[in-house]
Image (tube, rainbow, N blue to C red; front, side, top):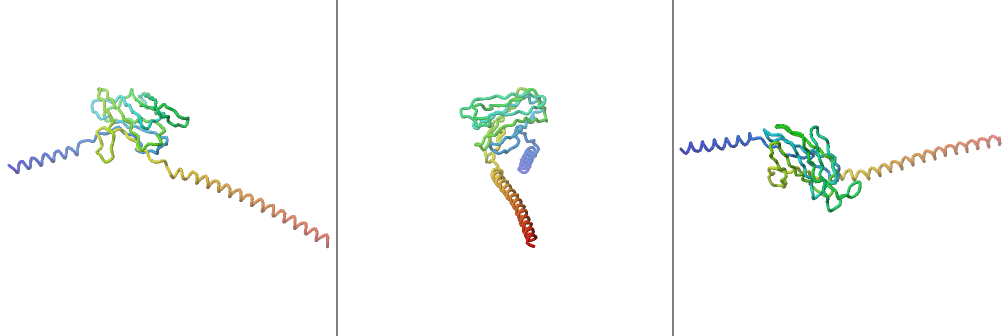
Length: 229
């Protein structure tokens, strides 16, 4: 009997393991790229899979960060979908190329289309990223035509297991120091090259003048010698 029980337990464990391996991993709403330089302009694509077998995704709402607000976005059209941008007021003005503003993007909502079972869709915006942040979480709400709503809003904490519904998160890296350092160096190099060219031209001109003066002096000397002879 003990042997039978052991075989039964082993069979159950083995079946559970096989089922675990065979079970499909659910896809998440994600943002691409995963990383971008702080303060840069970036195109952010939100990839939305349909995780249901009997319903279509018909709406996506992406909320923008409030701790590091973004002043404006440009939205790439998606055939069959319409979008709307919801704005909000912030207390601390945001610095932009056009000056300071207290207007910021609250969310972008896409509606009207359908992501069918087994399909996914990408929704892209272009935005200027804040300079004083290390990461940006874009909490998202995915709505299906059967009324079910999936909230991708859970924070991902480093060193802890990924939550069931993580918010799409963009990691901000330091501005490209190499590029920043190269620009002054390139300018200095260009200035140095320009100076060298200028000096070279001056040298050629002075050399030509010297040749002309020497030729004239030689000619005068010959004429003087001829007269004396």
